[in-house]
Image (cartoon, rainbow, N blue to C red; front, side, top):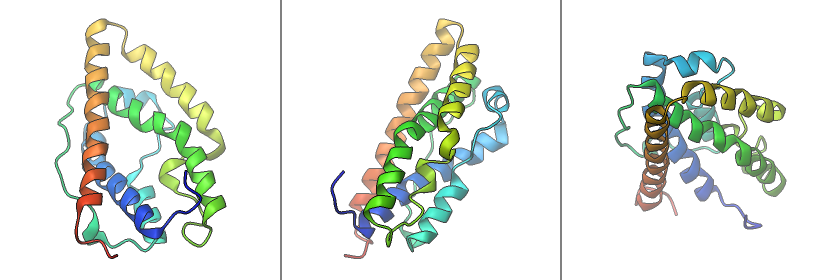
Length: 170
């Protein structure tokens, strides 16, 4: 990571994450797939992203708009959760580094990157147990991998929208 971190970059990154969580978590909460019920310490991210965005004085009109993939099966939600939960492993380091670099920009780091704090490893291990249990056959695993790829693409699409927008202040 660069030794400088500007507010515009932080706003774009948090706006993109907020957009993803906003479109995905509504379906996730409505469907409550078995994998989510079994991963009892799962931390929803939309409210964390909203709090981060408010901390860095992001303007809600700058949050990208788009469509979420339509996940209906438990195996697909496992793929989504794999991406979201896996991001906490490196995210905790990113959040720590942000606190070190720019306490004036985001004194709390970014909650979306470290929702479990010191319990990150324990949460990831619990998720891996759910992953193994829920993807026992090849078809479930294939569906989970495809959903994980679509989730990565969704994050990439929203990041691109956030950076391409001409509405951001200079």
